[in-house]
Image 1: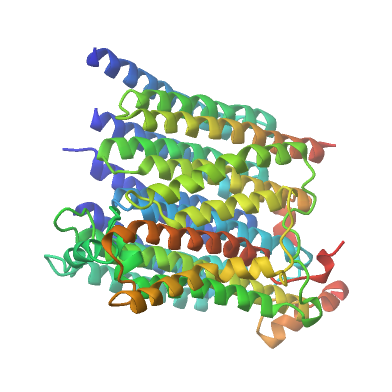
Image 2 (image 1 turned 30 degrees about the vertical axis):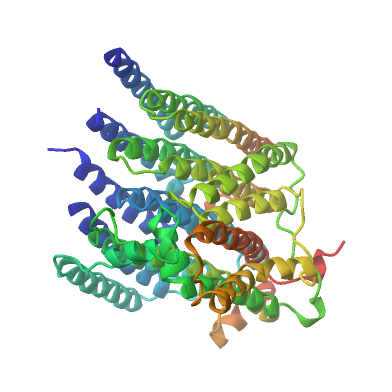
Length: 95
Length: 95
Length: 114
Length: 317
C-alpha cells in the first residue's frame, strides 16, 4: 500500500509538472496562471500521499496551509492581470 | 473488511490519478483558454477529491478525515472562484 | 540517508543557478528572485545537516531546522526592504539601475524620444 | 527495492528545472509564477526531509508572500515597461557567470559529500532544553525556538520590525503618516470579494489551529502568523480592506507587542525566579503560549506591512 501511495504521488507530480511547461511556453499569462493552479492542487494531493506513506506527522496541517495559500497566490496574480492589459510575450519582448 | 477498504482506497486514488492526467492533458492540448479552464476544473475537483476520499480510508482519527474533507472543500471553492476570475478576464480580452 | 544527500546536491545546484541569475539578469526584481534561489539552496544544504543529525527519538536535529525557519523569515524581510529601495530608486530617477549610463538611457524622457 | 529513491530523484530534478525556469523565463510575470511553483515543489522536498514545519514556512513565507511581494512590485513598476535597463549581457560575462556558478555548486557538493559521519548533532542538547525552560511543549522545534534559542527568536522578530521601519523610512518625507499604496487596484470583481469572504474566516480558524497544535506538532507562531498575514492580504487585495495608516498607534503597538511581551516575561523570570525565562514548570506552557500568541499578532501585522510598502500620499482618497 505504501508503495502504491508513493507511485501515485510520483505520477501526480510528474503529470502536473508537465503542465509547468506552459509557464515557459505561454502563450499568455492566463495559461501560466492555470498551470500554477493545477500544480497547487496536484502538490496538495502528492503531499498527502507522501505523508501517508512515510508517516510524517502533522502534514495534514501543512496541506491545509497549502490549500489556503493556493488561492492567495491566484488572487494576487489575477489582480496583476487586471491591472495591466494582458500582453502576449511577443509584445513584451519587442518593447 | 480491510481488503475491501483497501480496494476502494486504491480505486479512488487511481481515479484521482486519471483525472489529474486528463486535466493536465486537456490543459496542454485544448485550443483555447476557456476549454483549458474546463480541463483544469476536472483536476481540481475530481482529482484531488478522489485522492482525498481514498486517503480517508487510511485516516487514523476522525479529525484527520475531517481535515481531508476541509482541504478538498477549500480547493473546490477557491478553484471555482479563481476559474471565474480568469474566465472574466479572458472574455474581456476577447472583446 | 540517500534522500538527504540528494537534497544537499539539489541545494548546491540551486546556489549555482541563483548565482548565475544574480549576475546576468538585468531586471532588479529578477535579480532579487535569483538571490532568493541562492537563499533557499543554502537552506536546503542546512536542512540536510538537520536531517543527518537525527538522533535518539528525533528524526532530525531541531536546532538547524529551527534556524532554517528563522532564515526564511529574515530572507523575506530583506527582500521586502530591497523591493522598497528599488521602487524608491525608480520614483527618484525614473530608472532602476545604479549604473549612471544605464539609468539615464532608461529614464522616461530619453525613452519617449528614442 | 523501494520506489522512494525514484520519487526523491524526481522531486530534486523538478526543483532544479523549475529554478532554471525562474531564471530563463522571458517575462517578470512568468519568472514569479515559476518561483511560486518552485516554492511549492521545495515544500514537498522539505516534507521528504521530515521537516513539515519548514515546508509550511517555505510555502507560506518563502513562496507565497514573497511571490505576492514581487508581483506587486512588478505592478508598481509597470510604467517602466520598455524602459528597463536593456544592457546586453555579453557572451564573456555569461561565460564567467556560468563558471562562477559551476564552481560554487562544485565546492558545495564536495563539502556535502565530505560531511562527517556520524553527523554531529545538537538533538540531545535540544531534548535537554525541551525538558528545561521550554518544557511542556512536545514539538522539539518549538521548544528549541522558545528556550534553547530564545534570544535568537526574539531578535528575529526585531529583524522584521527593523525591516518595517526601513521600508517606512524609504518613503517620501511628505507622505509620512499616510497609508501605503493599495494592494487591490481594480479589485471590484464580485468573485474575488466572494472568495475573500469565504476564505478569510476559514483561514483565520486554520491559522489559529496551526498555532494551537504548534506546541506539540508541526506548526507554531511563524507558520500561523504567515497564514493569518496571508488572509489579511487577501482582504487587502480583494478591496475589502486597505493597508492601515502607518502613524496609527494600534498598528505600531501590534508591531512591537511580540518582542515587548517576550522581553517583559523573560526579565520577570530573572526577577521573580532564578534566571531569564526561568519559571516553575507548571507555569511554563500557558506562559509560553501567551508569549507566542502575541508574537503571532506581531507577525500577522508585520508581513502585510512589508508587502504594502512605504506610505504614499497617492493612496489617499
